[in-house]
Length: 439
Image 1: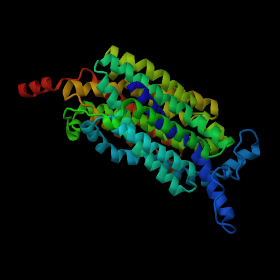
Image 2: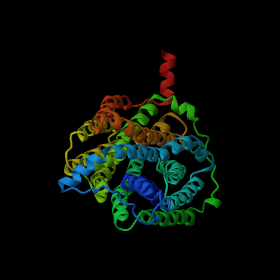
Image 3: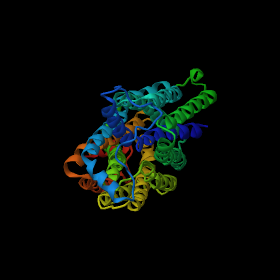
Image 4: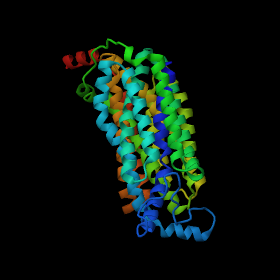
């Protein structure tokens, strides 16, 4: 039942994370044009359940529409900056909240933060559904950051605490990452199709219902108000942050996440500018990304722990991430993007499914087996990637272009990848003390 609840938590958080990716660029562009069109008359936005359709015809075939795409380039660059701020706001708030959620989880147990996370995500999805301005969307995204922190930290800690054996832990986390991957798979295509054919409110109201069901299931099964836990005292946050092995593992997660975050925030607008992509294409293009992530997480979550080769899979995964990221700048049509997204999803899934169980193993080998704080660090690494990526993508694309942005991101991953070799055979804390005393 722990696996079921964590599966639902990761599915919900990442589906909400990705469902906005194809919606925000077109919606914000349309809102700005609708606002300017009615400012001299009524001064209000269009109804929330309607798509404020942009005046530019984003289709793929006609040459005239391609010309219109080029004419909208400067305006889309401004929208790209707003989209980046919106996508980064969730991770920024989550980055601030995580250092508090991790130690709190170590102290009071995992079930109360998990229940709180489901409630907060329900509030966030409802805000998204009824938001009609940039400020309200920003608020909804920030609220999601608080809920996502509770769900991610509590969920991964529950799994690490439940599965003590390294091989079983890797397998369990691989299964839980299936929920994460399915959320990413369903999010962008579901959001784009629902937005085009039903309206902006519909995908978020569906997610609100899923959040209520997930929270209700968790409450019925575990009854958080009646759970009394006697948790061991966990290792202080600063002690874990000084551990070189944990820092390398967190760095691998951060830089691969950075690649995903930059692609999610910059690619839709770039497709609108250069390929005249329609709304449904903006979401469908991410489908191979999520499918390949699903495959990689289930394969390498088990293999990395079975053969103790997490360091090798992480190193190779980061290098592939870097090469694929650079290749995005040379793509000329949606078919190239589908193939590249498949590669990027597979490589990032390899790194995540190898490193996440390893972080729990590092705590087992070197510290007290209490996992809230170390998975708060892992979640902070993810948040830094999702915060920095969207925040820098807009200004960099506006100044030097999308291809150079991807060269920078890819280069960082290629350079950091070989550092994962140091994760081979980490020493136990007692062994390290003996080595230091001997020296």
